[in-house]
Amino acid sequence: MTFDIIVRGGTLPDGKVADIGIRGETITAIEPRLDAEAGRVIEAAGNLVSPPFVDPHFHMDATLSYGIPRINASGTLLEGIALWGELKQVMTLEEVRDRALAYCDWAVSMGLLAVRSHVDTCDDRLLGVEALLEVKKTVAPYIDLQLVAFPQDGFYRSPSARANTLRALDMGVDVVGGIPHFERTMADGTRSVTELCEIAAQRGLAVDMHCDETDDPLSRHIEQLAYETQRLGLQGRVAGSHCTSMHSMDNYYVSKLLPLIAEADVSIIPNPLINIMLQGRHDTFPKRRGLTRVKEMQALDIRVGWGQDCVLDPWYSLGTADMLDVAFMGLHVAQMSSPADMRRCFDMVTNVNAAIMGLAHLGLEIGKRASLVVLDAGNAIEAVRLRPDRLCVISRGKVVAEREKRDTKLSIDGRPATINRRHRLPV
Ligand code: FE2
Image (cartoon, rainbow, N blue to C red; front, side, top):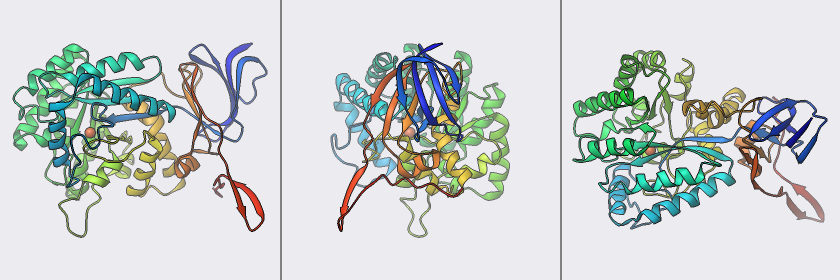
């Protein structure tokens, strides 16, 4: 038996040690020891081998634009939206495309091989849509890029958003988005959820809506999203992103809401880096964290992933395309500190996010696509703690990124040593 690639002796996220055999674009063997020839052997002993990282919530039309035309002085979501409106007036298709492609290179280097990006549909030129459709085609050999038609300035509130959103879907954008909390009234927000879900049902598309990204405890559009999902038979195809208002909702109301979300099989995508940065800005003290109720939803088997949302754009001045940064922040803000919860945070940025995006071809299993990452960490918890180098990234059976292992040489008191900050936990 021969393979194109064998990834030798790595530790899988479940703790098992195995060789992974790859033929063409497919994982064809996972065994404790493969005695076989291979075109290339990648030694992974002592290192974590994981499925690729997946980001189910991003804005690729805005990424790497930080400081253009100016910086968000207040740091709020609303100034970010206003600033993005200024940028939209001056940006060109080529600039959007080149920034997005530069970001995709970062993503590959971090083992991030699937991204769901919202793309603003309120610009009459639909320049971002055109640019990202081109990017999607360019990166298709190595990144699964899904696009969401996102009426940033409001499906009803922005005069041409409705027509432009439909045009974007006609052009090939994959998923229906929305922003009900930004419409003029609660009633308009509710109506937008209904119409957008009906559009998705008619076209056989998935839905991913920015839903209740506010500190207002009475912003309850997620309830309508769950209702429309079950009414229209969209179960398993709908996600609510952010859902930060749930942080501040009345506890009795939440005890009714969560079973409705579970019943409708609606996925939830909090974005912890951005939520902890933008929410609670109107508070004095105590200052709310603004992250949705992650553990409480997981306890009801609601699918909750972690999204990144922003890298160097009008809303967020940092970011590196590292989904382990996202998991690390999410772990802290949601207080997911038990070993099981820490492992779960790693699972959220790999397998759970892939499930939210409907990417059944990803995962470390025989017959799945040969896309994987070798990390300079011993296990999934250590990976979240260290956010380590990606030593090797394989996409569709091809090595697309590699780097040397980098240990630090110390010279202290004549005591030379090499350290890498790994530390095996007693559990
Ligand atoms: Fe977003």
